[in-house]
Amino acid sequence: MRTSLLRRLVTTVTALGLTSLGMVGAGAAPAQAAVSDCPSGYFCAWKSDNGTGTMYKTNTNAPTLGSWDNTFLSVVNRTNKFACLYDDPNHGLVGGVTVVESSPSGSEWGGPGSDSVSSVKFVPTERECVLPAYPTWHAATAPKAAGFGDLNADRVSDVVVRDTAGRLWFLPGDGSGKLVGTGGWNVFNSLIRHGDYSRDGREDVIAREAATGKLWLYPGTGTGTLGARKLIGTGGWNAMSRLVAFGDLNGDTRADLVAVEKSTGKLWLYPGTTTGTLGARVLLGTGGWNGMNALVGAGDMNGDGKPDLVAREASTGKLFFYPGRTSAFGPRVMIGSGGWNAMETILGIGDFNGDGKHDLTAVTNENFDSDTCYADGCLVQYTGTGTGTIAPGSVEADDWWNLNGAF
Ligand SMILES: [Ca+2]
Ligand SMILES: [Ca+2]
Ligand SMILES: [Ca+2]
Ligand SMILES: [Ca+2]
Image (cartoon, rainbow, N blue to C red; front, side):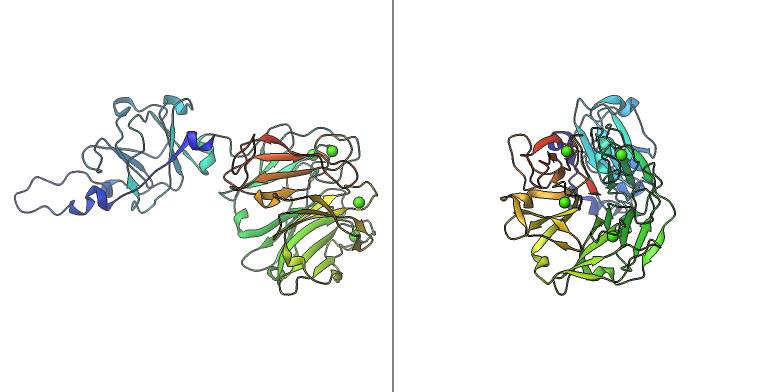
């Protein structure tokens, strides 16, 4: 779907002979408008293919182009947003759409990929040229009490998505999306949830700051939004390759964190405490956990009351189920025989189909190939059987591309 809707702008500055512009000799005609005449903060277009002649400019959405309709032959985007060029007026999607990336300096310019541009729109993320900022998420009401994978406590499994502009979107499960983080979230290199760390009965989010290795708690408010953050790890958390917000593994009813130590491959339990901070760590796995390239806090998939772990083995693409015990995991069981490296993200977000059993959700990467989805950006749903295993996957959406994580 994406390739038919989005064409990338190819810029070839030197091939278009721009270097000769401005080098007019004595007695020559006055210099024409050139690409460099496009003001900072504007999108500009010309009827010539080399950025000369009469110049069109705008920095606001243009549903129609008047006398400029179907005339753009060269363009430059000096705004700080993506410029979407539509073959249809009014930003319609029947014809083609070209995305022109931001080039504030104006150094990147070229042909628009179409001589039939009829409207222009500016958006913060590329996907918004053709789709909402957030992807499609549908889930059913679960019969059991709220708690796992349910930030707004309505018993419907929900997802939080980060977009490429650093915003957070809360997807309640009815196909809609709500902006819950207006920007700045790209400073984190890990975003996790699953469990109530602050003990107010609401699920919280934990974020690791890439630049500092600090760990922050963003308390859930119970509506899908997040409250004022609190520092729960003063530094050093970048020594961990993977963090999993897990639910309660040690059985004290407080949610815990599980993490893999990069240098040793050890798996550690960081217990939640009465104050909402993390207590002294406990060894869960003596080594080898660096061989896993995804860890998923999946909730209680086998129905014994203890949350379980799902992990992907990097070398084989196999998926394993580790049943939770008290401050430990039982022997693992293979629940996916291969191919799981074609998933960009594997999410444990509770019971999405409302049968009372925890399920798994995955978003594909460029290596995925099936009858119903090719390449990245598909949402594949795997219903849990209640024993820790999962049923074959079903592709439920194809608009999960051009995002920056989901949790
Ligand atoms: Ca919910
Ligand atoms: Ca605990
Ligand atoms: Ca369990
Ligand atoms: Ca289920």
